[in-house]
Amino acid sequence: MGALSRRIQGRVREDVARLEPYDPNFTPCDINLSANENTYGMPEQVRVAIDEAIAATPTNRYPDPMSNDLRDQIATWHGVRRENVCVGNGGDELLFNFFLAFGGPGKRLVDCPPTFTVYDIYSKMVGTSVVRCWRDPDTFELDIDALLRMAGTADMVIVTSPNNPTGNVIAAADVARLCEACPGMVMIDEAYAEFADDGISCERLLATYDNLIVLHTYSKAFCLAGVRMGYVLAAPDVIEVLGAVRQPYTVDVFAQAAAQVVTSMRGVFRPTIETIRKERRRLAEGLAAIEGVRVWPSQGNFLLVRMPYAAIVRARLRDKRSILVRDFSSSPGLEDCLRITVGTPRENDELLDAVASILKEVV
Ligand SMILES: *Cc1c(COP(=O)(O)O)cnc(C)c1O
Image (cartoon, rainbow, N blue to C red; front, side):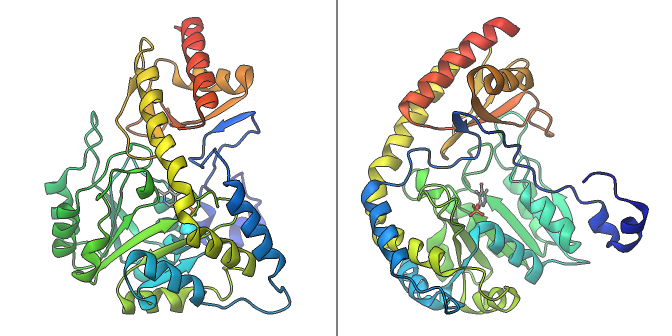
């Protein structure tokens, strides 16, 4: 935050005065590979169906507060019951509600950096202390033994799988051990699960562990980042708790209508997701072939890369080639790292060409 005036400083909650808001570091560019969106865009037939559904949606009545029709669809999709599903205004709202319900002063969160920084921000907002179980500095794999130990005294644990920004996954067997070790709640953030190999989701453990919450979003694979729609799967009483802390009507009628169409037509996204996985491999190989560039394996729709002068390369990509990627070079553990969303073949070609030529200039 900028400097606060003395008057406001004296009025605002002390811990809020110290908050640094989430900054996606956005600059408009021709090619945006910075926010892990699906850059292929909404498939035309789905877009047409969404437009029709929205046109038929009345706006004078409040939305169904719990989005029950959508919950039923999601439940059928995932083989659970409506009582196991809560939807939210993006996955981010559900994360916040998770902190509101299970965090707070005196509570402890364990997370595994480098990871999604929103967890840190929400823990500060609700006054939850954070215990960090750092990933291996070279491979970014989890230190499972340390994590199990820390989880033993945690109120909340969050593991992101595939992890943003490093692309690693956690094995379901390790999630099971985590749920057993942790007296509190275990959230597995699967925002990128659709891009991972089959079988990585820990969803099947929901039947066994009532302290497990699995987070999903429509923002990444399903082209609805602009609409704001996410959901969690968990035991019915966990869903009730999340329902109790949510603000009424955050999921509006248009978002419900769009998500229902996308859910019923989700098979249409499969070819694009397959293409993104193929392009991920091609982009990774292309980047690794550029001298000085290290690429980590990723199960998401993005790649973490390290290169000399990463911040300068990123600025030149933006200013000279109008390509936006995400700069992590000043984040702890991610020195000289950039995160690049896997784009369309043309976007990836341009990115590869630009990185190669900019690196020749700067090194
Ligand atoms: C994108 C993302 C989310 C959720 O995003 P929403 O757009 O709020 O649904 C959650 N977790 C991670 C790790 C993400 O990258």
